[in-house]
Length: 215
Image (cartoon, rainbow, N blue to C red; front, side, top):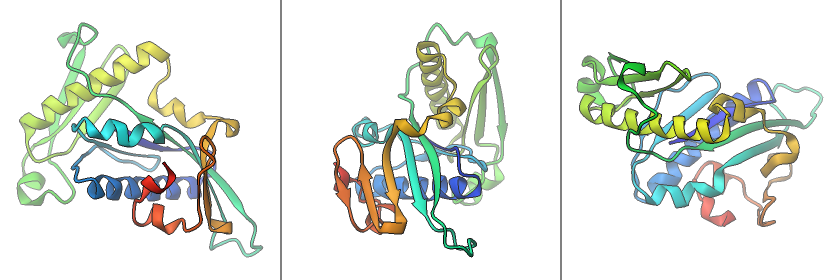
């Protein structure tokens, strides 16, 4: 599961989270992979890809991402800086930490681009772990498949939480010094701070999903 969570920067951070999420979906498509969308909201966008190849693609994306640009509504032409966090959760089979009596499961109609079957049947699954408050929402076409995926996602979230003590939403509080990449759109440049790789046409990343250019 890949989650893109907005942080500092207000509305511009939310916009950047959505842009980065869309670019990731294109990155998946470029690599011949498909994903199930999890529930999205004003501050978080996420998807699930069960193909093991996805782990190697997105391990390099984990961390704090920064965008610098001049918002269209800023009459003074001032550069604005926003931050988002990218969190990757590995899927796990249900384990001893997930006691059936601790789970709260509900179903609802799917939504999005899944066609009439998805939108008119209760195929979407929400699964919550009461002791930790962690939950997932899977919105694919098959209720049975969604239940299986939801359990693997939730098991992964619980394991990560128990290992780190940090919930997904708290990763968005990553400090500025922790950033792994800066999208400096004002100067037409993307820099990866771990490898010092630079791309001078950000649209190749954000509009075409060519993240391999930063590897």
